[in-house]
Length: 72
Image 1 (cartoon, rainbow, N blue to C red):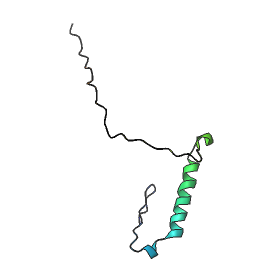
Image 2 (cartoon, rainbow, N blue to C red; image 1 turned 120 degrees about the vertical axis):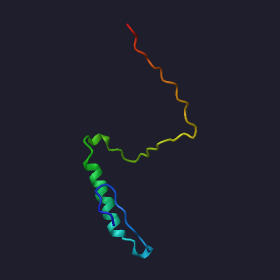
Image 3 (cartoon, one colour; image 1 turned 90 degrees about the horizontal axis):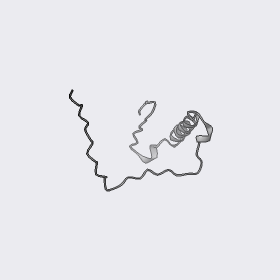
Image 4 (spheres, helix red, strand yellow; image 1 turned 180 degrees about the horizontal axis):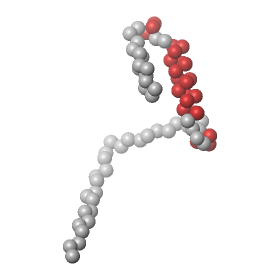
């Protein structure tokens, strides 16, 4: 089992051995920790889903204009 501060992994070889109580405890701790790190309580959003959209078609990048220094 991982002991990381940000990411943890739990190797489950059998469904019956899944540590439900431990997972609930970890999720509750993570939630409390995330709320504690919010500086402004107005930033806490309840009941909203935020979706990041990813487009199939990429935009064509415009060529960047290179500015050459003038010679004196």
